Image (cartoon, rainbow, N blue to C red; front, top):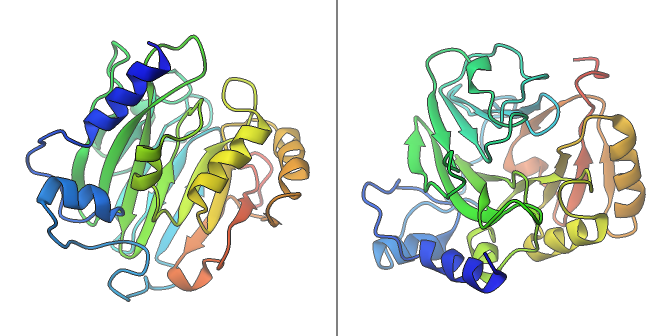
Length: 271
């Protein structure tokens, strides 16, 4: 599909008359479109309440696999990887694309809700739902050239006053519509392998488009890949090298301007 057609589809998803849309979103413009201006909970600077320290966290399991853990212990696993995701228990699993390094849902126990952003036919599958206290939505995007029209789904998770975005295998700069949806993101997981996704320069351009307080590199399997990206990215943004693969979340820990947090690879972490 040509880029013009892809842009039309991106614009079209904003007008989908979905029923049962969740009652909290990280993005007010999306809420207004679906609810005709109805004021709902917003993430950044929203209700003024901060999560309890130590309650909210994300855990990286390598590649693009994360555990998102809310204050009430709701657990969502994003993009379970066949090689690195342990047999963890969760309430839901999100799958950004149907590649075997992202869709090993069988590795997650506890009878989780499976939320696939892309169908087996490589078409976008809209998600608008709430899993306990985590609201989950997705928007369509493309992978690298050769993967067809859509083939990737960006997931956005809202819990409390925090908004997290997982970009999956994004292979393009964001459209204006996507930027609007992601404008209140606090933590953004970004693929940085520069092999099957964007190169380093375009990765920085995507970060520039969103400007989230925290960017977490993902979609790499060797520490050397993160080192190469950090060496390039520190010319644009501050880099923090963390000694653990887990990050505790609350509003007070968010930097005022964008910083890149490189989590320790779980194969080399002391966790």
